[in-house]
Length: 158
Ligand SMILES: [Zn+2]
Picture 1: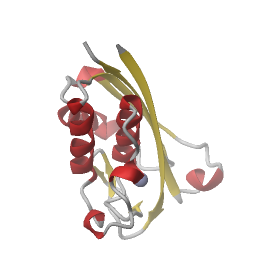
Picture 2: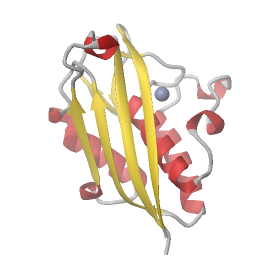
Picture 3: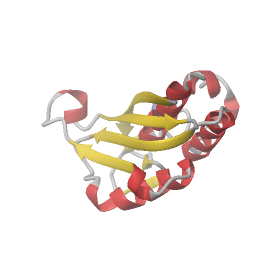
């Protein structure tokens, strides 16, 4: 059996915060605002794997109203979420992601991001891909005020 999952997230970018993608810190004068560490890519991937397994979403599993998730490490949240997916007998076939922001450029960090996601999702890096796009200067993302991430995954159960 195979199941597809889709996740999407957006965070404001503000000075004084770290810019994290799958736990990898990118050099930037601003970073994601959020109750947790704001890791937009980790959050999109969590929703993709949970959605594919049909077992909820990030807001249900880690409510922002719960103080225990304040400044949480989102890659730890991904490990917890994927643990629940694995409990249902699923494993990841592949994951494909798009991150949209004006800066910084994702390319120099891509292999580290792939490796971090591969480790969390227990697959080889070649089962993970991440693309960086810009918004061509349009809208809040184009103005550098936000970053958006989308993730699509395939789960398999034997
Ligand atoms: Zn988020």
